[in-house]
Length: 92
Image (cartoon, rainbow, N blue to C red):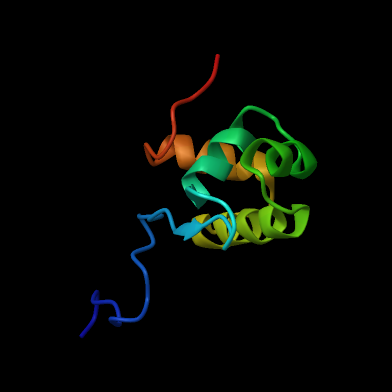
């Protein structure tokens, strides 16, 4: 029906954080929301990788997923869109 979404399509107004196990040898979870928080603070992929004990490639994958889910093309747009949707707090 018009106005209804297919079950396999995410709601365009939401960006549910995806949590994943850091690695088989470490403890804890890393969430896209956590990566987004670091992006919001202006951290590079290398800095985020170091802080979260991830490879840069894993961080790149998380950032790409964040951009895709928010429907934006840049990190700056992601920060703005996430704040607009109330997914993060804005920095001043």
